[in-house]
Length: 134
Image 1: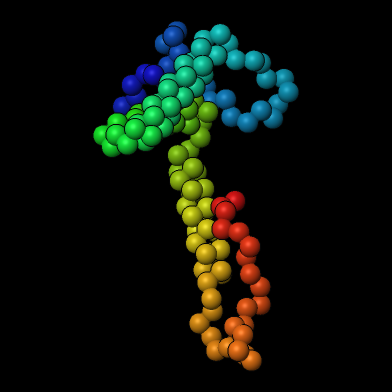
Image 2 (image 1 turned 120 degrees about the horizontal axis):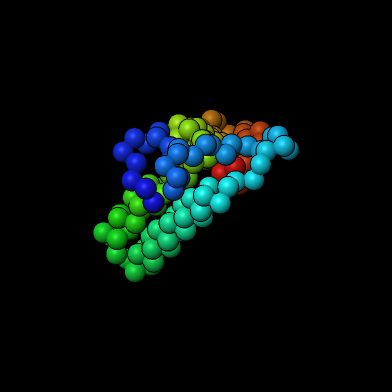
């Protein structure tokens, strides 16, 4: 994986030219990625997979320092993939925050109400049946 000092900078292909974001495929006339672009995509995927696997192995082995090191390497690989695809990291962090807030909302809605009971039963107009994030 190329070292990128600017997180928003695009990785360069073997030819030295910056790679273009792939983005969503909305135009059917778009050409397939070149051999150099496929190589970059494959290398980024392999690197990310290796770090994810190493992080999982460190977790199983309960090796705290390796978990930290491999998690950081995984996050850098993920950031490189976001850059390659033209994904704004703020959009990813916003989605994670949204999921956390929805989970917190479901948790609060499942808590017993702090109201008086009617006929010995708590007043609960409805109940969320899952705490899984969307």
